Image 1 (cartoon, rainbow, N blue to C red):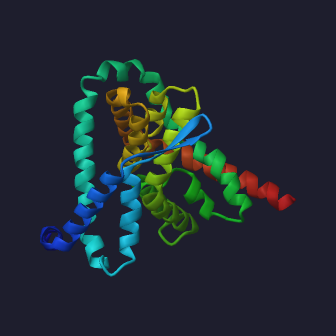
Image 2 (cartoon, one colour):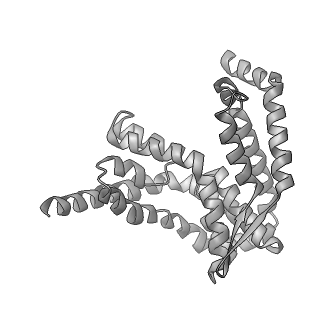
Image 3 (tube, rainbow, N blue to C red):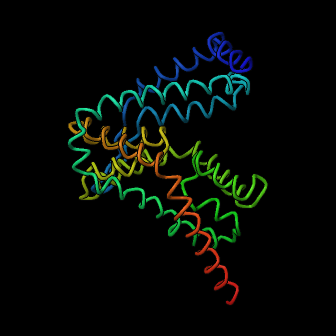
Length: 266
């Protein structure tokens, strides 16, 4: 309790951290959104992307120390909380549209299993062993880290695999989804709302980056995009762990056994 109180006190007392954050926001907003045409599609570079890059670069300079980076952690929680509050307000008026898309939203969690079929063969081909199970059974957010730790232990190969994906997703996940969603939504004939549903992977920062790119590409659909992305993310948070327990992890184990057995026979 005292440690948390000291951390909060340090957050408000650290004027250098607040100045750096304010300057980063001013710079990124001044740069604005860049659109890079790519064939029939568009890659959208949003201020959030610049902020992530600037923040990462500042970490390797004397301006930001490790103590400051830890002190800043509560800001992420606060920011996500405000985002969820905004989403809750928007989902209300858009509830009929969300309900109308009920079957698609309920089945969207099965789409997250695509990680297994796409990434597991690649991981095995690259020579990874049981680390691949932890890396590919999900996108490796907090609930899935807990699942792997509980089942295999933190020092297990599976534990090292899921932690690698957790760290990678924390650093690059929002950037990747932000770039990918805007490009695919403008290059394919699929509805932007389908990509809004796909952006709800169970991570607030990833969902914000992906839906932000969609809103920049389709500003007239902002309310619908936020509502569908928020509802999808909520479903992923509430059902994603159960899907991993009963479907994702057993399926990954089975496929890993089959693929490594075949590879051994060759």
